[in-house]
Image (cartoon, rainbow, N blue to C red; front, side, top):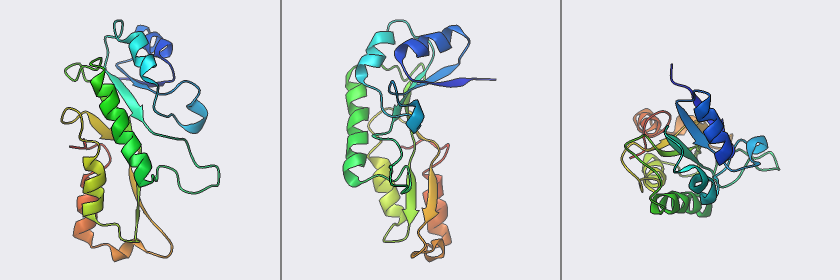
Length: 171
């Protein structure tokens, strides 16, 4: 069975590889306590010549908000920063999509207040800056606000939104 290991440094990625990991998810050093954030490009540079297993770069601009508000709900500025991180990592030329390198992210869409399938597709499209199938949104979810129940969303539209999330590659 393939084993993916979340790691929080380039050194840990190499250690996971030596101990049998099938793939690593590279997160920023020191970000374990917040669930992982985007690592600096330097972490990938440290291991690029030595890693032989797929590397998925965590794309997450920040940890959970300290005020208890929902996690994985991003502002337009944060979404733009996430897309820029993908472009920056791609520009290094260090990732190999043929090996299975790519990106991983976590995102939550809050239903209501104008969220429609077109909004989800637009946000998902921001992450289409790498090879087809290499950007995965895991831990993706749809939720509703108390003042905008999920029932306001047409069921066909909801199915379309769900098809853009989860273990389905964002294209």
